[in-house]
Image (cartoon, rainbow, N blue to C red; front, top):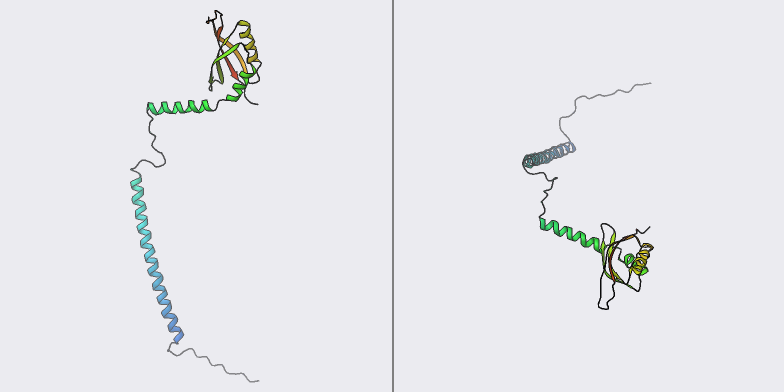
Length: 181
């Protein structure tokens, strides 16, 4: 058997190939482009950092944005707000329940003169006129037995005289309206 001879040439020719030259030029162009992009981004970043530092130093001298200024309301504004709350309370009264209760307790010899609800106390003040004391107390019992009102009590009464020489009783009753449950 014969061994083949191996030729080892450690010294190559010094002429570069065309592909090598093209790749080298493209690599240099790419490196220059990347360096320019990096330099541009670095300077932009530095400018933004300077602006942030300037704004933060200026922010310390201004009032905090998290704590809004609270202006004090004038007496007129407070009164207007209170009036608005009273109107809302008045509109949300259980009018149908109050009228139903008054109709349940109605008596032919009792004339209603005024109805004044109080939303905060959940009460209604009824001013009426009755023919006599028995009619007055019957009306008061009917109000107490009503499904919509409770705790009706006589606040004031006075004997009056009308043009027919009769003596009707003018009276005021306060009752609470019941919650819907």
